[in-house]
Amino acid sequence: MGTMYWLRVVGMVAVLTAVLWSMHNLNKGHTGIPLVAPKGASPVLELCPTRITWLDVAATGEHLEEHNTHWMKSVANGPMEELDAVSTEKWFSRFCQGKLTATDHKSTDWKNVMKIGYVEGQERVLKVDGEHDFQIDGLSFKSDDLEAALSTLASIPKLKKPGE
Image (tube, rainbow, N blue to C red; front, side):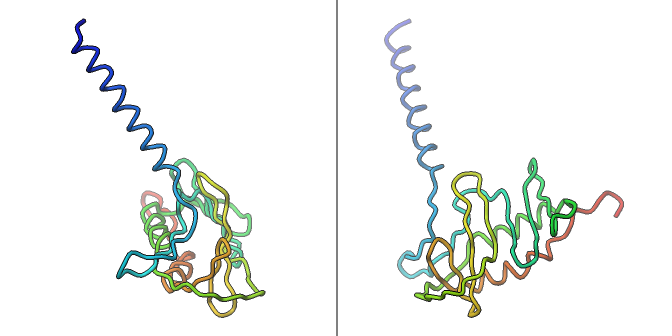
């Protein structure tokens, strides 16, 4: 075992260390709503700094939860029914990011729309007031994209059984 062998081993360990360090820093994520957009772009709402594991919708009593890569839904603590995976993931892609307009709305009448649970980090509460202003983490904003996603949540189809 010559010098080149040990040089390669040290090089591979250094590369592995750099990759692991990078993955660790990338997985930390960010938890706020970016209200500052890149030059010339609209601000983007990010409700999913990490993967969502469950949602509780206050108005309808709906509860969505991921079980072993299958999205399940119950209404008012009823039985769990499996949702169509593709439709559910498409809904989450619309829900997680959308255009927003930051506001300085100072309402005292915020109502909980939903609680959101994540793989990592604390749960968050999305609130709304009567004027369709939203608030999360103390930041208020308007978002037509978010309103559209919330209005289509109930229409996510159930998983069809074979032969249906």
